[in-house]
Image (cartoon, rainbow, N blue to C red; front, side, top):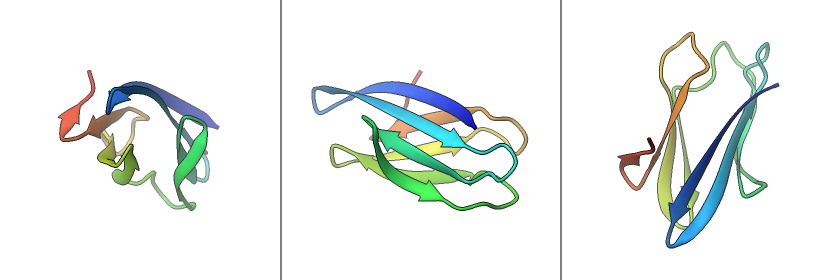
Length: 81
C-alpha cells in the first residue's frame, strides 16, 4: 500500500492527513488525525479529486496527473506548499 502524508493547521489546530491507496487496486482512504474520513473502492485510477473536511473546512486531495502518485492538498482554497 502506498502512502502520502500532510501536516496542516486549521482553526488554530494542527492536523495530520494521511492518504493510503493500493497500487494494484487503486482503492484507498483518507484519514485525519488517525480517523478515516473518506474512502473509495477499486478502479482503474485513483480519483482525480477527493473532497473531505477538516474542522469544518473544505479540503480537496488533488492527484497531479494520471500516472504519478503525486498529490496536492488544498484546504480552504489554498494549496499546501
